[in-house]
Image (tube, rainbow, N blue to C red; front, top):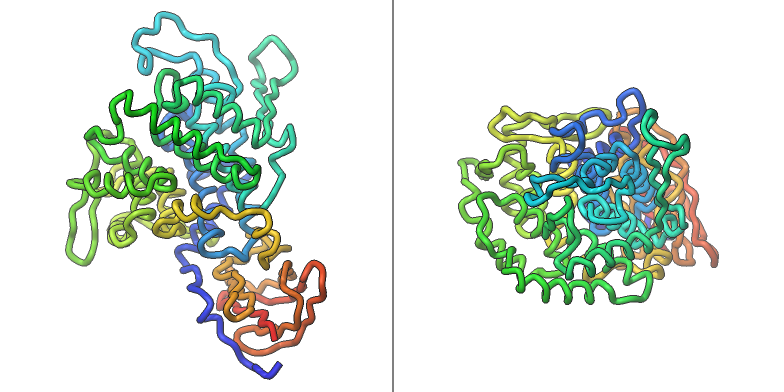
Length: 480
């Protein structure tokens, strides 16, 4: 091994402190415990019925590290996997889905002809409620695709426990159990039942945006299951909607739902979404001096329009996104806590900030890349790719380290890793890199050769002993 120094700069751009801060905030929220397990996440409606409810925050916080792992940190496996699993666990808590028992009874706001409330049910995914079940399906399907994992394929992999203390005619809790593909079957059957217009959210109310998430999930599951259900569902969907007048092209008083739908429909229908983007954005932005872009406030208060638009721009127009977030940073109060970055809720400021936007959506926008959802749709990872790609394991966000860079550089035959301690303390870590090709490697830390390591046939594993502080650490395993 003749090379004595090596640089990480040629391999990829590291995450910025802002991007790393968002990931750290997701970890902080996902791992909160009593006495404040939902700190900073309180929505405008205490029953979790509104658009900034826990379910929407948690789902977007899951899609963000998923996008970051796919596009930016493909070698940082276990930290991302454990983070997404923590968010799935949070999604299955009754605080998130317990609203459904009341909502299932319907009401005249969504069904004006209703004369009698329906018989309620507690199971949050068996029927309707795609605003919850669709997100949960995408969360576990994303996990399955990114990590070639069967964690949610056990018959009880997703279990909902309905156990009010003083209510009911039984002393035993109700339990509803599903696995990844049985949940998908429920969603598929609901779509078919409603003529392929999509699954209802609230009773008697189908929203285009909420049905995009399960369609993406089907695409990921097709890769693992060897099926082609996503394309079949989309063909039915595109055939059904013209018979109802094309609601996607109907002008709206606000841009929020169009933006949120476009951010994720772009995965399966990029040409249409870009055509619509050119007209849907008109009149909703104002340019200011200094390269800032202002989102004109919608007429309906309380809708997290800024968060929807940030996600939309992250997928379709990152130049406008940068200008919009520049104004947000100047007008709001970006806040750091325990290494995490978020925007506290503020409803009386010039830029309205809600928990969906401040906790999740802006972070997603920073971590996604332009055409990010489309690229993941076109080229989901199959099991062979996941199990053959060098990856960091044996460490998580709980170890106090931020992950700024982590990938296999095929041109240089090198695994490149950049870390930092979020707290500034020196941290001793012992992670491993697995699935390295057989060969001899030079291990470089901050550019200097430290030792040579030989990977034999088999797991291709290298165990590391590293010290990380606030200045960060760059480590390269370079094949001879």
